[in-house]
Each structure stands twice: as structure tokens, then as C-alpha cells.
Length: 323
Image (cartoon, rainbow, N blue to C red):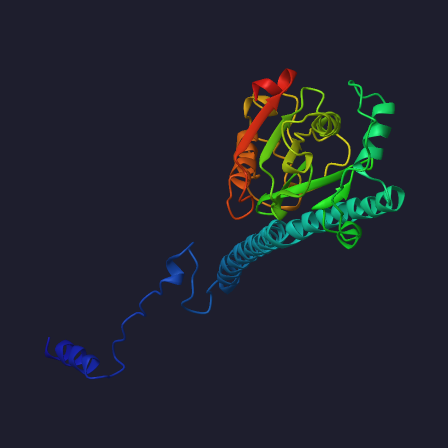
């Protein structure tokens, strides 16, 4: 009995009489793999570790591939969005402005050609030719010695559309309505130049929009009347065009045939494609036909421009009387 206790005690003190069996490892308990002793199955351990490693590697590759796709999509989206922004903010406005400049240059070139054709033509000879071309009223062919205002030929030959000739060699003026929007009219002289006129006759054309014929008719009627001196009468024939009418300038205000919302005779707003809008971005600028008349009346009532003006009459024929 004493001997057995001694033996147990010596084992506790590090002797070799009694040794404890080794504690099994965690890996040896997984899948029945034995790592203790000489008979441990290391091949199964390696297969298990390599399997886990291979799965992690495949998952990592798939994740990297997804990240590559997402990154590529983000880059493409950024490039595409940048392209759209550049087109809308830079390229398209420049494209529109260049197109508008081209149209204006083409209009100016045509106007210079008409200057060559119409050189030396007075309003009387132009109206006579217009009458031969089919004016509705008999045109007065009496005294042609009435003073005719001279036209600045340098201005006619410039790209400025303020003063041009129309296809009948009548002088065609344009007033600026603001924002570089212009409105064409025939008149005894340019309204912006003013004058010592005492009477203004505002002659409104009808549905045919033939302002030149109304201008010629009243211009020559004023020669026959004895109520006022012919040189004291300012005749204005505004021209409310459609886009399809001849010699419409790219910056001109014009209307369309839609009734009633697009027709000038009811005070409608102008066509959205007018007024140089083809060269601008954003909301189109439009002008009411009533606004045009207000602008004309404001000019005629300016004491600075027309200090002697004491009467303004508005005459409208056919559709013009509804305006």
C-alpha cells in the first residue's frame, strides 16, 4: 500500500512511472481524423483544409468579378452622364447658336442681293410694280415728285436687318421688341428715327397678311387727300407673318395658323419657334400680337421721337378689324 502511494507520488513529481495520455486535438475530433500516434490520418486533414481554402478562393474570385462589373458599370454610367451633360450644357447650345448664325448670315446675303436689284427704286415705282403684280386697289399714278425719304445704303448693305428691301423693292423696317426679337413693318420712315409727323395711320392687313399692298394703297391715298400735308402723315403697316411667309428673319416674331390660340388676330402668343428660339436653350420666348401694337403705340406717343404728333388712327380691314 505504501509502495503504490509512493509510485503515484513520484509520477506527480515528474517521474516516469505513470504518464497521462495526450489530450486529443480539435482537428482530430472533426470527421474522425486521428492525429495522435503514428496512425494519424493526415491526408483527410489536408483535403479538408484545401477544400475550405479552395471555397474561400472561389468566393473571393466571384466577389472580385462582381466588384469589377460594378466598377465598370459605374465608370460607363459616369462617362455617359458626363456626355449627356456636356451635350446639353455645351454642345447643343453651341450647335443651336451656330445654326441661328448660319440662318441670319443667309438672310443677310439675300438682303444684299435685293439691294443690288432694288438700287434707285422709290416707293412710288415699287408700288406701281406691285399694282401691276395684282394689287386689289387702283394705285394712284399722278404726281411722283413728292419727297421720298432717303435710305442709308450702308445700312442696307450691312447684316443689320433693321432696314431691308422686300421682294417688291419696298423698304421693310424692323423694330426691336427686346431680347433681340424683331418685328417687320412697312412705314413712311423708321419709327426709331422719329420725325415731325402730326398724324399716324396704323393700317392693319387682313388674313392675307399683305401689308405691302395696304401700305401702298394708303400711301398713295394720302397724296390725294387735302386734309393734311402729305409729309405730315406717317403711315405704318405692321406685318404679322406666319413662318411660311417670305423673307421672315430668324429673329422675327411670327404666328401660326392654329385658331384661336396661335392666330395673331386674337392677340395670341407667337409661334414657339419664332424669335430666334431655334438658337436658344430653355423655355421658348413668345410675344402676343397685342404686345406688338402696344410697342408701336408707345413709340408713336413718345414726345422725344414725335414731338408734333397729335392724332393716331387705327384702320383695320377684314380680319384686321378684329385685332
